[in-house]
Image: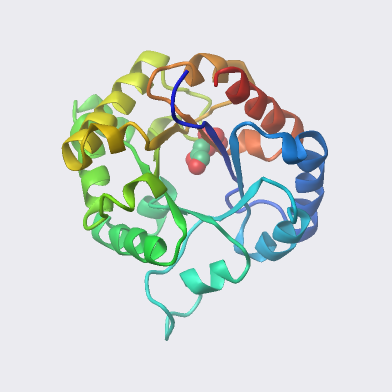
Length: 256
Ligand code: 13P
């Protein structure tokens, strides 16, 4: 038992048209609906946010975006503001995903601006942190995770920190089928909680949810989700299909 409610978040990445997204959402809602005992967040691409949001009306399942620009408005072609997301009833936003760090050169400083802007607009950031294979092999996993966590959270106040969800996603485990061992994952999660304790004190650090992400699926979820500091999952591939996503929610429920 823990005081932290588990979270299962589906990061659909660049998959699903609006119509496909609604079909998947309806299948998930049909089985889970209002009954959920864990926090569930669906993060479709921007083009499906509105229609998936409509399919979630009256349900407890939450809507998340996959990115956001820190500025309020202006000449930022192709970007989306916090206010725009809020107007679609988005409540969560994934920030600093490794794919954005790698393919779009996002830095900790830029990600931090987004985290601060999201919180100022009542959006809950899902801040992603995690090392590459080269960094793990060089023995710098904890240093990288510390830089991502502290960099991403700069200026986040004690009042705000419990609205932040952190996702530890070892880059080498994303989409590769190579899941971190439970011991590897728990070690980093405990390290992140220690960092949060130093920054915000134990009572608040104990309330922050830290998710694992990287090839999580029903077959490996139970073991990961029963670790002391693993409070849920940020799911890529297995969130694209109703059956596996529902089974992950059930695994989180059983581990609660
Ligand atoms: P996979 O579950 O496909 O490995 O993706 C994890 C991820 O990047 C979630 O954000």
